[in-house]
Image 1 (cartoon, one colour):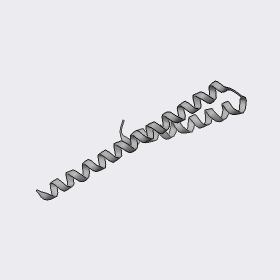
Image 2 (cartoon, helix red, strand yellow):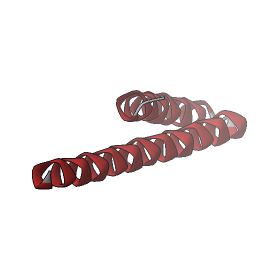
Image 3 (cartoon, helix red, strand yellow):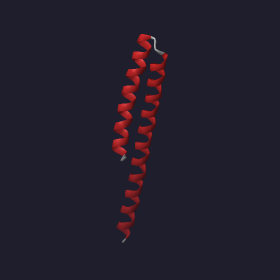
Length: 71
């Protein structure tokens, strides 16, 4: 996935995870709370991956621009 899609998936997973966790808490379902927490954590990791990809892409583009400027 690209950085933008990783970030979007991460945000979606975080939101769904928070919702699951909230529902699990409201109805007293520990399994649902755990699933929600796990999905929320997965979302945070996906967002971090997207941020890392963006940073690498930006650094690569800056380096390429500097090299091309010197040519």
